[in-house]
Structures are given as C-alpha cells and as structure tokens.
Length: 305
Image (tube, rainbow, N blue to C red; front, side, top):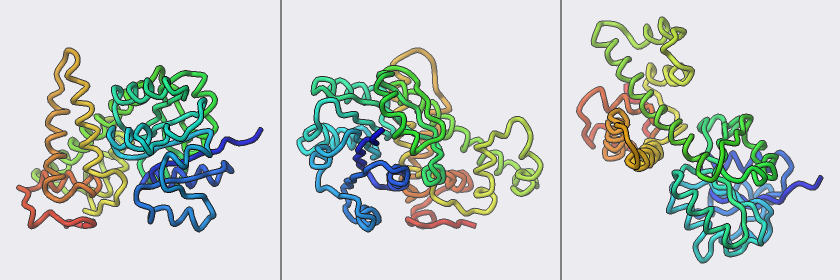
C-alpha cells in the first residue's frame, strides 16, 4: 500500500524530531517552518521546504501542525496562507499542539465546511520521547479519520490512543499537564522540606525512589532537582500556557481547582523572572528564595547550584 504524503508544519524542539521519525519510517515528507533556518536539517536530506503552509498543503494527503497555542494553529491552518487554503477536499489535517478542546472543535468545524478532516492529537513524553519515536498520542475526532491516519501517527508514538469526538484528545492532554505541573511543584517542595529537616536531596532520591507515592514521572525528574541541572524537555512557558487553558475550561462547570490556580501563578512567576524557555524543573529555584531578575534571568542557564 502506497504511503501517504505528509506535510509537517512546525520544526521546533518537538516538531523537528517528530518530522524526522516520519521521514525515517518512509513517508514522503514536506516541511514548513515560520523560521526557515530550522528546516536546514531537512533540506540537507532533500526534503522539500515550502514558503507557506498553503504551498505545502497542495502536495499532501496528511498535514500535521506542531506549533505553540490556539492562535498559532489558526494562523498556519486557517488564515489566508494557511494549509486549508491549499489543501484538497478529503485531506486529513492533524494538530498535535496543545490548544484546548474549544479551539480544536472550532478548527474542526471550519475545516468540515471545506470538506477536510481534522484530528486533534496532542502528545506527551517531552523531547526524549519525540526523538526516540515513543510519544504517547491522544487523538480526538472521527474514528474513521483516526483509522486512516493511524499509520502516520504510529511513526511518532508507541502509544496512540483514540479518545473520542473532536476535542477529546485535547481534554485528556490538559488533565495530563495539570498533573505534570502540580506534581513537579509537590516534588520540589518535598526536596526543600528535606533540606529544612536536615536531610539532603540525595537522601530523598535514594530512600523514597520506590515508595508508592513517588511516581515514575517524579523519579525521572529527581536527578535534575538533586544536581541543579535541568536539560530542556518542556519549557516553563509552554506548561504555563497549558495550565492557563485548563483553568479557562475549568470555569465552565462546578468544582474548585485551588492547586491548579497556585501552580499556574508559580509558572507565570517563572516566565517573569527569565525562565520562560527553561525546563519546568527550574520551578524548584522559584521555591528556594525570593526571585529577582538579576539572579535568575538568562536564557540557556542550566545550572543553579
């Protein structure tokens, strides 16, 4: 069976390795990025690069976007030079960003009027899993469209889950990222409490690593908190954006979300003190002491001890 022609929009920290895995799995690939320099690694492999999403779309069966937030997705898909302006009817457009259920349903409805199919398929696993092709992918949309696109999605992830109608993938992703944000704050507080009580962070890592309350995610993040080195896997800016989306949707029903509100404010503080492009593990630095721009700012700073 002939493989689908794939167009990939967004070659950032996550998008570039995801597109690379699609290419490695033998799918004909075309790419677009708003910053053309980021496409150089694909140009060297003779992957076609297009000047606009519209130009890219005319040569694709499946189009994937991996950008930042709702406005970015609408720009590259729905605007005048967006993918929908150049795609043929029946084209499958998949957004793998985190944009929230409402934005996903809006994009789906607009594309349906043009005769195009849409899936929301946000991912989790951060950069290491994007590189290895082992992402977890949550998919919302029509089941028949999911079935048509599953081979492409499986090129990027080992756990590809169909969740339900349009927006469902985004919904479960927001739940996931709420837990990520809150869990990391709790872990950082635990590490700092240990120090206050005369223990070391190394002792926390050693003696609590296998107790039930410590999750696999906590175990993955512990070494960075202990060493004070935080390799970039998921930025403070992106997590704050996702927590804000979760807060926005939480206002539509009953119930309170006090921990979510506190966590989101903390990551806002991280952005305001120069940590927007740093890994979310730097949240521990915000809890250690009052933050000033002079001692915390600086893109690319990876060690704080």
